[in-house]
Image (cartoon, rainbow, N blue to C red; front, side, top):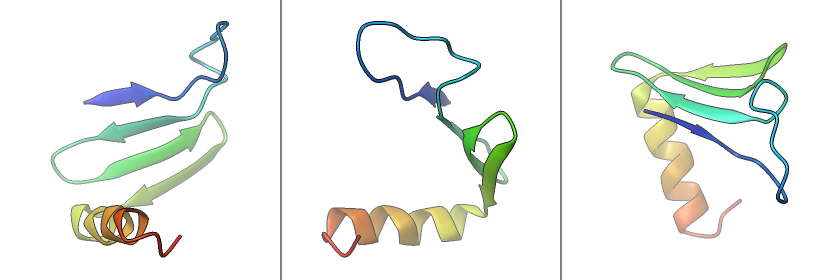
Length: 54
């Protein structure tokens, strides 16, 4: 599943950050600025966000 995170009413998907959840990794970012996480790392990130730690 890939979700593009646009701000406002105008979106250029290639320039907006995205979260791309795959079976073996999660890719977060845009074009040349990305971070690749394992599913386990992504779950830790989600929990920290849900718990208002970040």
